[in-house]
Image 1 (cartoon, rainbow, N blue to C red):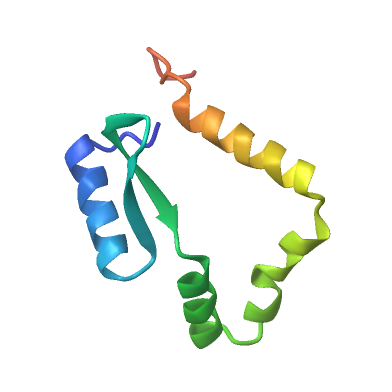
Image 2 (spheres, helix red, strand yellow):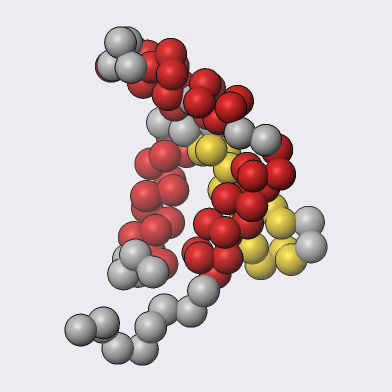
Length: 91
């Protein structure tokens, strides 16, 4: 969906992992897959460092949503990421 090659995505995840922004874990149900999870504390810490006036509300707004809605958004984004890419560019 991003148009990036698998090598470019691996390089991007490598850099995010070295920076402490994500962690990798083996998928317990499929040994060929790797699960990449964000480290929200690192994001929040660095947002606070670089944009202190905005940071306190950056992640706090999530607390205003019911768990069911957050689950729906998470499912939507996962489905969107798993959707096959279009065969032709949209006109």
